Length: 362
Image (tube, rainbow, N blue to C red; front, side):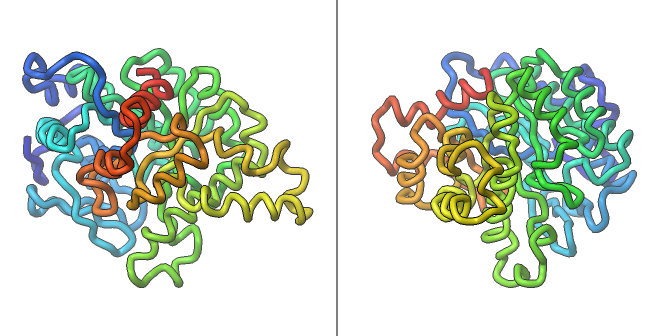
């Protein structure tokens, strides 16, 4: 399936999308669950069309002048992306080459919170229906993490109610901050409560970290990503812990990207600050490090020694395979960093798929 300016999937009803992405379902191998990638991004064609034709947030568009080499335009930058963001048949071949069985699909930047509430809700439905279609066509290869209009919590809860019980939607996907608000903002509490009641994990991803943290010092050397994203995750986790979210919602599962960002390596410093500074002394019920096992972490840390440190710190049952598919800062061979640790077969399989199956309810 190719995509140019004139040819997109039309409509967003699930039946039509299923027909468009189904391919040869009978040829898809079934059987035991293989490796599960919990950090795999997806731009459905209808979403791309909506951004290009109806407008997106300032500075965001998709350059499709070369259909086989699309460009994601954001913040004045041009990021090459792969057609497998939306071409699922080609994605399956690439997944097979990576040794990955299942992708937990997720929309990343620009999310939908920048839009007026009703349009944001419509875009969220469009994305989520595309994920349902992908799962329906390839049920053992794709599940989805719901996109939500978090700028309108009532509409976000309504969308979660619409998706409740879906075999396709296995999590909710949120940015680490939005519209100047942190994840401890009380406006998000109804969303957390609904996810907790549905036993639906919340997966996080940084969103334009440079803008959130001060763009001036993150312009050089691609540090808006290499440093900005992991620090942005750290800010989000700090707000979740010290902002009382983890105590208020004790059964809420949260999955952190990029191996937790800076959190595993600054947790001791945060805990010390909690002990000596009045700003944090009474904001959480437990010492900061006691919350580390409340989170789950993907494997995107780019060095086996650091992945070993993470496993030793939080436990092998809290770590799950992730690739950041298919950005250049991710893994093309996401199993290699796990295999390099020479874990027992049981522990390796937990990280490959067992932990994800438990958290996502696969």
